[in-house]
Each structure stands twice: as structure tokens, then as C-alpha cells.
Image 1 (cartoon, helix red, strand yellow):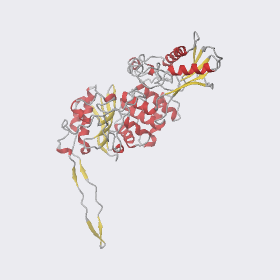
Image 2: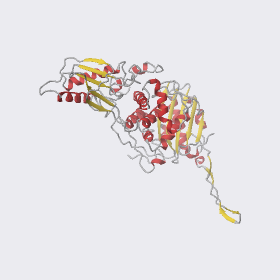
Image 3: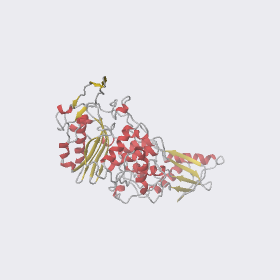
Image 4: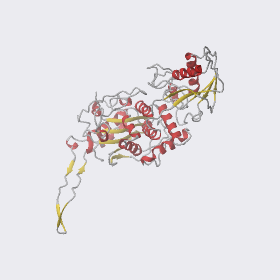
Length: 483
């Protein structure tokens, strides 16, 4: 099935929008359902009101100093008449805040409490994604390596900050399809060690040094995150070495996470070494900053940042978001600490001119209720994404598509299905917040950026209410009024 042209905006009108619906490497061309056209919607206004009232300027000639000069034709004057105000009265929204912007002009077309500071939930991942694409670049990868140790029977495993490293090689055995595996790393290691031995000598690796100090290995959890987030499968500890995002079941996205990812990864590697040909009866494991300058025996690399960002946004992967935020910190010359994440994301996006005054960013995933952003801030970043032909422009193709994939695959049902394939957005949900932000390709092909929040006493019913507001903006198109 072909995607709808202009899905993201006029900057892509000359080509069909392709969305990377990957699970880390299996990029699948997703077919978008063709726009159904205007089928009517919960009374944002009448159908007649969808036709903008326009006053056309007439060309005229005026006499100036004895000479006829044509008057410059004036632009058409619009009088928007399509209101969505009645949709905001839905009690499921409790307190609504939001903004709609024209990504081409930067004009604010609709605003309600758009400068209020709010906890954004997972909508914050759009900020992390933009910063990662900007600071790291879409093609960057993260390497996990094995170096020669101080003796012929010692090797050093060095974590490179890739949480997608798989414990097993087989497809379907991890949510991170296409990611490198510990099996590959072990087989390369045994092959390299064997090459330095006399023929017939068996490989005997008796010592493994584990270096997970790309950032402070003890700095792996934010105090504002609920401890239950690990048991519920929302997030792993943020250590520079782990396998499968530290899931108990690598193939289940929401599988419980452990309390010591580095030890699990080390034990997994020892088992893989044995399976690959290590004959030592036991392997002593030591955890330290090795400062090893030994030869590189093995190396595997993550999928490119562009693909990691896509998976992170589509599936709302909190662990991947936190790792990307730490990598941005290092790329920005900071120390990769949890406390540096906010400064790092701001620095990475500073060049785009979106004011971060008053904004507080505590993490990369949006799990913390201490994050404080405004709808205008989120929309401002998304507007720069929409306009960009550079690195951050990839984000526009990575967002979930309404009714098609990712966290929006089962959203926008009923009357709201009119926007199927016409909205790309990031979802958000934490206690006290339901959020949605992204792009709308209107019924009249107008392009809009939006950021909507329902806060206060809200539950998952607020998600449907937010979708109804989005569908209202879609139906109004260029005739959206701010009253």
C-alpha cells in the first residue's frame, strides 16, 4: 500500500512519505490508509464554515506625479470561522492546555494556556529524539568491544552505552530486531584469541574484566522515578553495559527489569564464550575501569541513531530514551550523568532558536513528573523538525501514524478515524497527564503542528478526548479559529 503524499508537509510533496516502522533494523515500508476526506465531525462547526471567508484584493492603478503606477496586489485576507472550543468542554480533559501552529509561518493559530508549565510525559521523547539526531547525527552507532587483557587468558568487555545488545542471536528472540548480539561478540573473541595460539591449543579464558564506566555506573536511576517502574517493565537501570534492555524476557517489551544489568550482561557473555569454544572450567569476573590499551579482539555496533530514534518513538521505549539522552550528554562535552541530561538536551537544540526559558528537563523519557515544559516549547521544536531538511528532519518520519503503527496503531477510532494516516504524533501518559503532540495534515491539505495536554484528574479516557480535539483541528483545516 502506498503512503499518502504530503503526509508530513509540503517539503515532502515531491516524494512519497516513507515511515521506518522498524524494530531496530527491519525497516518496513508502511502503507498508510488513504485519507477518507471530510466525513463530518462532532460539530466543531458546520460544513459551510469550512470554506474560509476571503476578501480578494483588486488590482488598481493610481495616479502619482502624473504617472500611472500599478498598486501592489494585496494578499487575501482570511476570516477563520471554524471553532473547536466546544470540544474542550469535555470533562474527560479536566484541564486542557495546548497550541496549534502554522509550521511555515510560525504563526500561533490556536492557544489555550500554551505557556503553562506542565509535566509532558512521553511527549518529551520528541525533545530527546531531536537532540539525539542533532548532537549525534542519524548515522552514529554505539560499539560494544572486547579487548585483550593483561594476560593471554584475560579479556576486557567494554560497554559502549548500547541497551539493545541482544543476549541471543536468533530473530524473534528480542524486541530489538537487527541489533548486535553477545553471541557475535563471543564468537569474534574466541576466533581472535585462537588466531594467536599454536595449532591444536585450546582457548582458555579464565578472567573477564568488565568495564561499564562510560558514565558513572552507580549513577543509573533518578530519584523521581518510581522504583516499581523496573518491576512493571517500564525502564531498566541506565548502565553503559546491559543486554536486551535488561528484560527478563527479551522478546516481551514490557518484561520486568532486574536490579543489576551489568552482572547479567557479564554472565551472559561468559556463557556465550563457553558456547563459542572457551574451555576454562570457570571464569573470574572483575568490574572496574580497565583503561585497557589491549588489541581489540571483537566489536559489534548498534543500529544507527536514526533507527534507534524511530523505535524509541514508535514504541515509547523509556530505556532507549534514557540511553540516548546520556549519549547526547557525552557528545555535548558533559559527563553523561543523569543530572546533565537537561543541560545536554538544551545545548543540542540551542541552534534552532527555541527558547528554553523556564523549562525543566529531568530525564530523557518523560517518566519524571518533575519535567516541566510548555505546549509552546514542544510545538516550537516540532515546527523546527517539520521545516528541517537536516538531521532532525528524520524525526518527522519516525513518529507514530494515527491508526497505522506504533503507539497510535489502535488509536483514533470511531468518528475520529477520519484522521487515519493524516496525523503523526507522540503519545504521553503518566499520573496526572495525558498528552499528544505532532503533525496534522488537514482535510484541505493544510499543515499544522500541535501540542495538546490534559492534566489534573485524568485517566485513559482523556486520550480519546484529546484525539477528538485533534480530529477537530483536522476538520477545520486552514479555517481553524482561535475562539
